[in-house]
Amino acid sequence: MSKPLTIAIDGHSSTGKSTLAKQLAKALGYVYVDSGAMYRAVALFAMRGGWVSKEEGCDETQILQHLDEVTISFVLDAEGVNATHLNGERVEEEIRTMEVSNVVSHVAKLIPVRRRLVALQQEMGAKGGVVMDGRDIGTVVFPNAELKIFMTASDEVRAERRKAELDAKGQHWSFEEVLENLKSRDKADTERSDSPLIAAEDARTLDNSKMDRETQFELVLSWTSNLIGA
Picture 1 (spheres, rainbow, N blue to C red):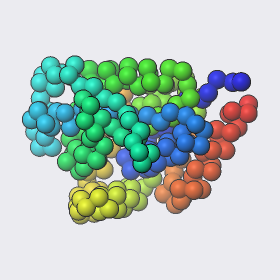
Picture 2: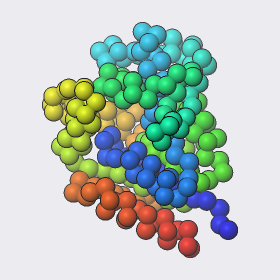
Picture 3: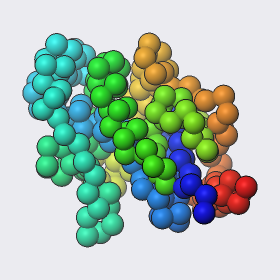
Picture 4: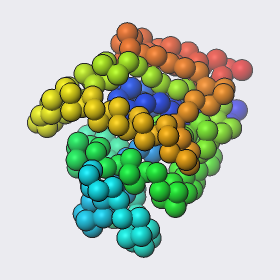
């Protein structure tokens, strides 16, 4: 029996990385790890400490001084949700708010934060049989992953999807505010000096601007099937 695959899914915000990763993990019987949730959890920790804000950026000294106090875990709840826990507290819903979205890039650009979380992510996926999504999975975390996917979609489509998600959760923001947030995060992700958001050279690009979830899933599942059977 061949070794289970390591599948790395990278891409821009609101391209459906997590949705696809969860579908694949369930279909293949693999572990799913949401690396973005880990950065959001650290951002929430920093917000609670008063060390980061959208306007002022972050207090790097304070965040790094308290970084060792952060523990992050994923717990599968009764509804099948792979819920994020920060220091033992379920924060899955809180880390998905626009307030956290507005500051997560400030925290994610800190090199010591990235180093610590990358080490945790590599530990989680050391034995293969894992699907992980994020911004630098195929380039930094798992550069030797058997399957690398880079997801993208138009700005307008991504903003519409994100606004619909927020509306469904009772978080009402204008389309313009959501679009501005996505563009701001894209800029921060692609321009940071450490582990910027770029497609790995051997990644398969998946533009799902005009693709429904089922078609997308079947396409990627065929990619994995070909690799498993190779």
